[in-house]
Length: 304
Image 1 (cartoon, rainbow, N blue to C red):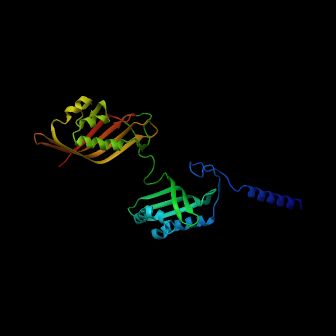
Image 2: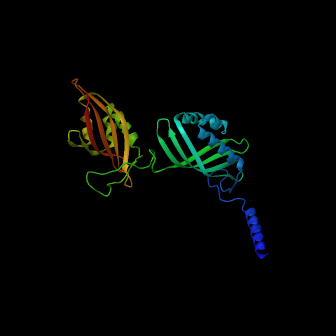
Image 3: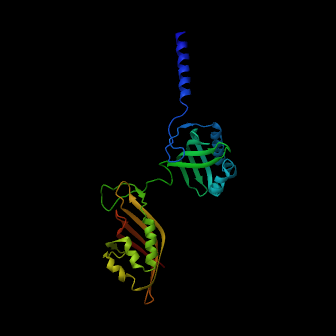
């Protein structure tokens, strides 16, 4: 009898405690709801998201979009339809989902954690951990916003944050480290450099380099190229056309911001005497920590 009484008492205390906890957390964004607590939302909003995911997994873009607001469809409908045209298989499997609201808001935010596998019609495959927020309008019951955070599985065929391996000409602390893409404006700088180079605009060209940058030519020569030398560089050419095939900025993982950019392309130089120099070239531009090129290494391939 005593055990039954204790059990009933604990259940009553749990119920009272649950009644007290009607909200928790805090909304911290600088908007009209700042400082408001979070409360649980309706399962109806969660059911809408589940149906949208089921349609997503079948590749039925029209059915999927039927769960979204007209405004969302106008902004993102074409992307959704093109996405399904490009993909062969989509399998999103949520493993936890719950609806929450900001107190005073007329929207429900459905938080979802899932694992998604993707296969494109071109053969590429991908698997990701996803954390997503689907914002559902309480009155219409439609999803009117969506945000996503993702983490790739380490055995993905593409999309990893690091890959490859650096060896170096001799062993160092960096030997064996992975490479990562660098994003300090190198690609844009190379594009502007190529544009200025083709215009024979030496004043703009030199702004991307340190004064006295090391130029390692395809013939094995090494020249310390000063700003003064840019003034005479274009004198013997009547026309220059450097066309890149690709621009790839990389750096060694867990090192300072210095980076190396490989540029594959074709360059044609027409001399004032009418002769033509045209070859496929690979240039490696080494950017220092200040974002300027301090070394260039070039390789070339003769054309038929």
